[in-house]
Figure 1 (tube, rainbow, N blue to C red):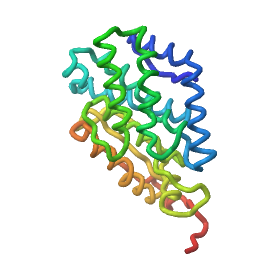
Figure 2 (figure 1 turned 60 degrees about the vertical axis):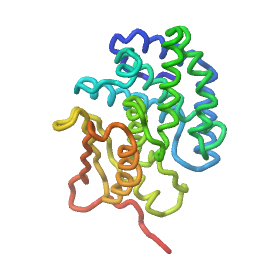
Figure 3 (figure 1 turned 180 degrees about the vertical axis):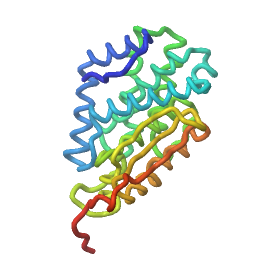
Figure 4 (figure 1 turned 90 degrees about the vertical axis):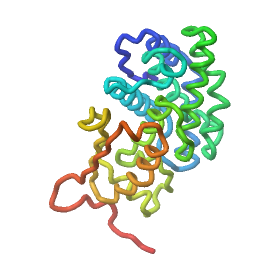
Length: 258
C-alpha cells in the first residue's frame, strides 16, 4: 500500500517509505487489523485507509508546528533534526494500530509488542546506534500515547494522537459504535462532513471541521477535545467547527425508538 506521503526532499523519510512499501509483513498486519476491527468487532475502518489518512495528517500537523516555530522533542532532547521528527511521526502513525491484529481491546499495548522489532528493522538501514535506539523509543512513545487517556510527553506523539482523532469524517469516527444501532455514537459519526488542517491565525495549526448536523458536537467533545487536551499540542492548535449552512440540518435517521 502506498502511503502517498509528501517527502519534501527528506531523504530519510523517503528511505523509510520505500521500506514500508516493500514490507509484506506490515502490509498484512494492516489487513489483519482491519479484519478484527470491521468484520469481527463491527467498528470503523482501522486498516490501510486509516493508516494513510493519519500518516498524512500527523505529518501536516508537525510541519505546520515547525513552520510556526515549535521545536520537535527529538531535536530538543536528542539533538536530532526536524527531518528525524518527520520519520518518527510517519513510522508511529504506520504502526500505531498494528496491535488490533491481535485484539481491539488494549490494542495500544499489543501494538508495542509488534512495533519494537518492526521499528528497529525499518530504521536499521537509515540510522545507527545510539540514534537508532533513540528513534525507536520515540516511535514507541507516540504509539502508546495515542490512547485517549495516556499522557503525551513529546510533540511528535501529540501529532499522532491528534491525527488519529481527526479521522472522523462521515462514519469514520474513532469512537467505537455498534453498526446498525441508533444512538449518539452512530448518529454523530455520520454528522462530520469534512476536516481540514490549515495554518492558524492565532496558533500554528487550525483544525476546521464542517458538520452536517449538530450531533457532530459529540464527536468534537468526546474524541477530539479529549485527545487534544491530553496531548502536548494545546498551546499550538485552535479548533473551529461550523454546521454547513442550509435551511435545515441533514437528516441522519428517520426514526428513533427506545
